[in-house]
Image 1 (cartoon, helix red, strand yellow):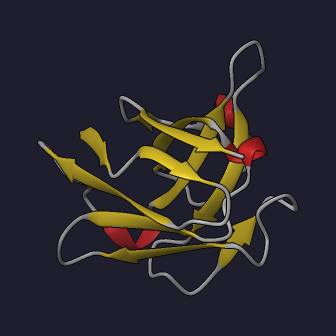
Image 2: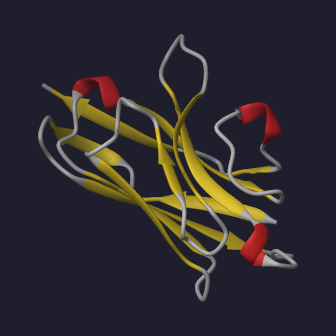
Length: 125
């Protein structure tokens, strides 16, 4: 399985961006069990959880720092997960990584099965 993320860019504080992540290759045997999500990593910091969504999209979890500003969603017909980001802050500046886990959602990067290549988001004040 390959994950490819799109949609990063450089914006000013308060702006919005939407990230997309497309799964390709030998896609999931049963997508209904596969949790997908987003993590981010800022310079000199560890990779941190941002948001995750369950296989059928019924359950979502967010980091406290993005709750109310970011929305995760997925379209299993397109093997795609999205991250709508609004009211962006300079603290959101990071490389954003798409992630997939065969056994469902997780906030722990050590439990992720597949990673995308990352897309840079830069928010200026």
